[in-house]
Image 1 (cartoon, rainbow, N blue to C red):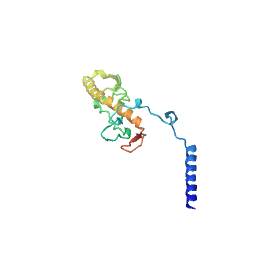
Image 2: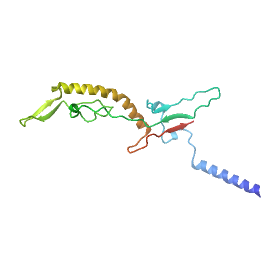
Image 3: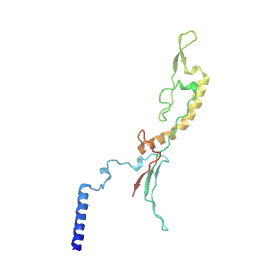
Image 4: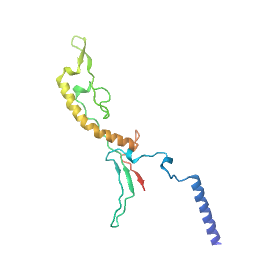
Length: 170
């Protein structure tokens, strides 16, 4: 009686396993995956680490971690001097774009007349812009890489988590 019961449980288990395989076919090719990321497309940033396992001798284990992605930290653009800030065109804090300024602005003189003031009219303003732009140009390249890594990480606006690791295991 026990043997008959065990046989029926095995048959039921085998049936459920085969039904599950028919319903949820295992994905065997990367083209069948909903999203595929080529390793050559990984951003070059410390927050994206690719571990290439090598054959290790002396009984050491090969790590099963192949890819670790953590949320990169972003930094703000250096604040421009007050004398320059009003002259900057939109997008000056985007590291992908160069900082540009308006060539001229309209202003009102002490008599109430509208005059055109050129950016180059003030040597201090030019010096302040050049020194700030030097700081900004040092900030921009690493920030572009960090933002590219953040897009790869897939963070959406409003995500409050500090770090989230994705693991691809072999």
